Length: 148
Image 1 (cartoon, rainbow, N blue to C red):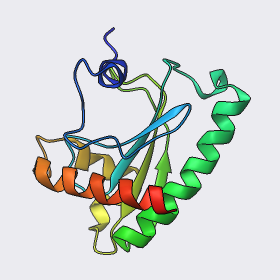
Image 2 (image 1 turned 60 degrees about the vertical axis):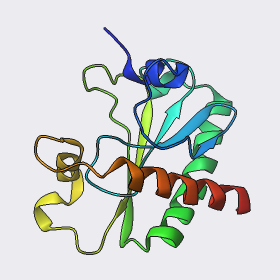
Image 3 (image 1 turned 30 degrees about the vertical axis):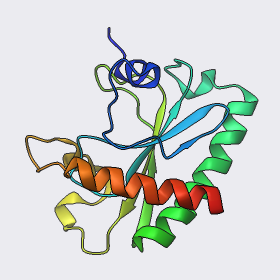
């Protein structure tokens, strides 16, 4: 099975139209795409692993620090009601470990709260953000990471 995360990491076929927001030793921080929700970020492990129990101690440690930093920056930049954090990695072509960190807006309709928010990743159901908006947000968030 093809791994879209590995293809994106290698540069063969980028998933997000925006630049990488942050690169650490073990993780990349990207904006999900296609996506209808601004501020839907994804931490993607640099190496191909399909289960969390396969992460080593350093990858887990860095993941925790990056989640904290990402959540604080999202709250500051997006003024979101709360943040969702999820790791499923079971969709076809997306079994590579990645962690969704989502800025949940305070006006999100009830039918999109909780796990139902994944409807915002289905372009056939919602109109994706224009690539320019994603690029602009990624640039702002990248600057925030450098200041943090």
